[in-house]
View (cartoon, rainbow, N blue to C red):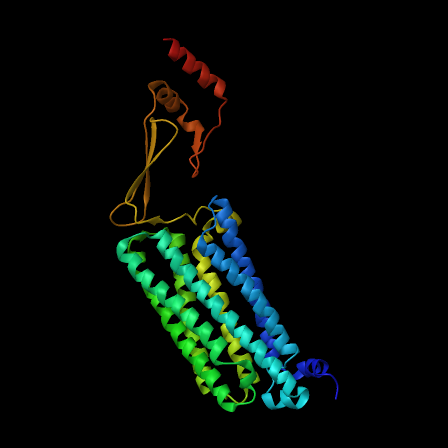
Length: 364
């Protein structure tokens, strides 16, 4: 018999599920890395420091990269995607033991990544909307999310000992029951996090582009719930005795859930990068429950107010108080001044005539 690695690699030709798993893992890692890069670039463009949520997402991306390496090893070295009987016939019990250990580690990483994404989303809620009636439900969900993460982590690490999973068929069922229980709890918590954002929408004013982005976020979040439900159904209806095949099936859905979670948690922060890429100001920041906020400029002479009507979108209103000389000069040069969306003033006429006129008026 040839070496198990060579034999299982040669069996990759008819391991369609394993090939699909590698392809999905690769594409998901590229998409997640790109999304996290855009998130950090947006922070840089706005000159904002990294928050705890950003660090949680960075750690989650690092763990996803580690899980990607494990999934490659599971397919190439342990025959994930093949039926268990074929894996044992080709590689023997040793490869099955390796498979269980790697799958066990991959599950630990998956549970940790899911917990980090949930905590990052809840931390954003607490940071962006510091109101009492919103904070307490978020604190409760944050406690539930941390409890789920620790429970799943401990249960996977202690209850399902890798050395016993191959020898006892009941351990396969025990592992499946653990997967189903963790998946159901994760699905419920994701649904509660989605519902917790509903009151926030009522106190937030959006531009048209941000309304579209928010709709996309909710579509992605709903997709996570749907895919989680499909994964739970597959785990319930799966065959615990054919562990290598069933694991590859659920791994595809688990990877999709993780990358959708990265995208959903990062979309609210990507507006500066999107505006820079598409060269547009449509992706302007939201007005988070503020009805009127004065922004003072260099002197007391210029004040910009952002007025928000009771119904409709935010309407910027500018109140400028300037000296009489500047006012007279601005009236004469009105048709030659362009005011951009960034409140920069550019004159199309040479400024020498205006300066001379100002000096003559000042001398009077």
